[in-house]
Length: 138
Image (cartoon, rainbow, N blue to C red; front, side):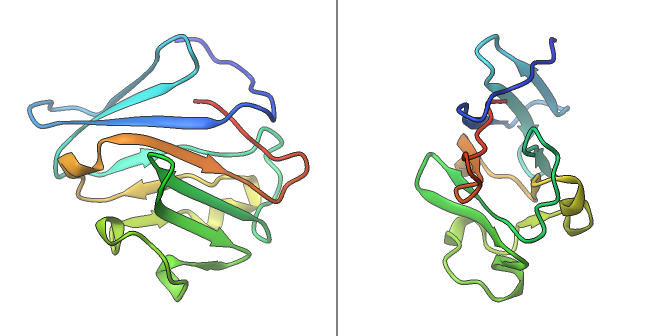
């Protein structure tokens, strides 16, 4: 597995495959920069994301989407779905969290708890207000 630095023009796309019979959580890069994550249904999964600068993002906006449409998690300078922000897709309510103590280190990763087959898909993390926009492919 090789480690690659990504430009601001690349988009973090994380393909989450939920496997019912798998007993482990594994991830690998397929050569295109897309990281495929396999997880046992009912377990938790970590979806990694951070700007290449590792800058403090506590006062920034970032969002996670599934298949380009479903709102998984939005963080806007401290406001997010777990503390009053509206708009999260019903499928993910109460199952997604972030690492608030890691935002100062540029960590926008999330955890989806109790995964289901319906969670399979492509996940995107974006920082739309950073100039230039921070886009990564994992």
